[in-house]
Amino acid sequence: MKLPDLFLSESDHVPSKNFLRCLRTSAEFYASFREEAISRILQAQYSCNYDPFIPYLAVNYMDRFISRQEIPQGKPWILRLVVISCLSLAAKMKNKHFSISNFQEGETGFTFDTQTINRMELVVLDAMNWRMRSITPFSFVHFFISLFELNDPSSSQPLKDRATEIIFKAQNEIKFLEFKPSIIAASAILVASKERFPSQFPSFQRSIYSCQFVNEENLQKCFHALQEMVEMEWHESVSETMSCTGTPLSVLDRHFTGSESETITNGSAVPEIKRRKLNLHSNKW
Image 1: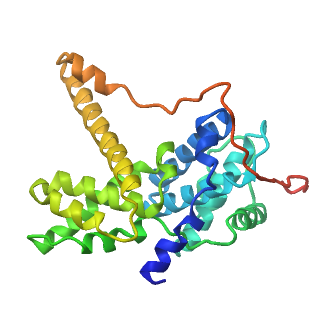
Image 2 (image 1 turned 180 degrees about the vertical axis):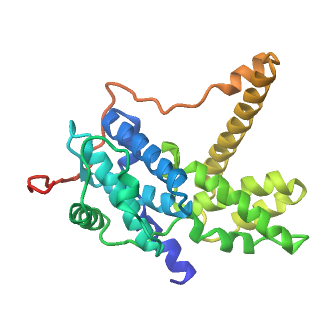
């Protein structure tokens, strides 16, 4: 796919528009569902030693699925079925082996056979309009870095590595669902460049702002949110180190150690999201 087509098509590979507002208002079930699903997906990454791009893609599938599909409440096994199906699809997309038995090892309650998981994969794919080859922030990283005139060309790899790390971390937070993949990529690269090459940062910033495909207002908003996330992570790391060494925390340290939470506001108007109902009447489910 050509670069202009990537920018034009990226909105087809993200959750539905009202999903973020729904999560931020009174859709507590979906917020909790997403949080636990991501936790299980990341657990699979560490326990099964997956390429980190597989869990990232699985979360992308899961977000797109639950933003368009009505999930029945009171059936906790559905979360596990969605998680394992999204991981299986992501592994297939990356041409990697996915062991259903290894993933379900040690699980209590429901275990799912291959046929059930394959049927659930079809439900997920249908909700995503069969767009399995997702456009993610990683689709744009090389392009944005190519806009920079680096003093040392070999420094592009450390810049890419740091931006990649930031993108992985950002996926877990609800607030970044409002941004297109290209905006997240550009913002992550700017945050990484400010860390690694502060003297060249103004030049890098101008290069990205001049890109015709970038909305400057959204870019600034996402950049500040990512920078805040990175700073919060740094302060938490420092606080943990001080706590281990018995060093007392200052007032400023304590201020920054509080993790940001997505507030669920009761009584707010909930945007209508048209979701398909999940057909669970088959005896095999």
